Length: 479
Image (cartoon, rainbow, N blue to C red; front, side, top):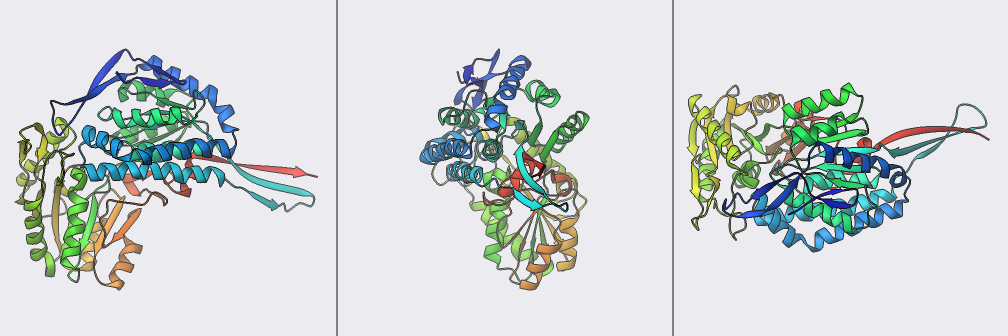
């Protein structure tokens, strides 16, 4: 039984849940404790009690903990990557890459703990000095999703701790294993009791306590739009700080002058790797007329060769979707697309068993063509390996189609034109823009986030994380 971490102690919950391997549903990764509302309050109380001392800890103390955690994560990346692939379903190379990213995030923010600076500026009044400094926000509640079960917790936990906050983490129910492993590493890295707390449990119970408790000074959330809106409303009601990363319906524009191989490789990666379960995935491919037919044909041929199998097996390119509910949703959108008149060019069928005969939540990646911008498959986030192609007359129409969405997380373009690449980078209504690269896949030392319905609040990652996890103080002194 894997327990919750509250005030430096491993605590059994009133319930437990089974962590199931989506590549082989007969395989139980482990039994994980489920906290209740009372334990959530205990975790918050522990974080509140520990905050004053941790907030006044030295940069060296914070550096040492974060650096030790990052070093252990990197040293164990193969082991932790295997766990991640087993519980979430992304391929083993992708999982190991995610773990390495988590380790590097902790290393980066270890350095940031030493670089928290301020300003000393002259006052407009004689004999008065002015100091501008950053202080921790306080107790931070972190609510993380299932699709990046170690990287997203890492990029929230590391800056929170680096800047002197205490943390209560509620990971997604589907993937408690990676979060538990991370909690175990942090516990042994030297954190004082109560500075970091892990409460695994239902969002409706544990998450709700975090939203309502006045001792939680800030909430950082990654997940669905609907849940994000509820979190925003709850935080506004009690004037708590909040940060939201939500949905995406990311476009990738392919122009006539694009290198076809580059465009197809970027689109396959963006749309189908990690089984399409990335908020940065390109699910709308906007292709101009001159290259449209060649591009669709090349995509269909490449999809036919994609190896869909057990996430941990060598050579697997696409693993299973995360669970039965997500598979049903993906298949429902396949039916919706057909019903709207879109042409299913490739894939879209469920696969009951993998190559070894093990039952799992598999489906063949799907590509739709002859779609229009108003179809539901082009408006709603599917969050699976389902991609559609929209035909555009020229660059100008492609740009307009690209921006015609309520979301604005990532956008990509495949082109050999410096003119169009430069124009797209400036005019794409997205927080992140990629040229001749997959939209999914970003560096850990630069800001992550979007605009419109995709994100709210300061950016995550990089030095910009300080905007959320600190508050600014201005102090005046007369000599």
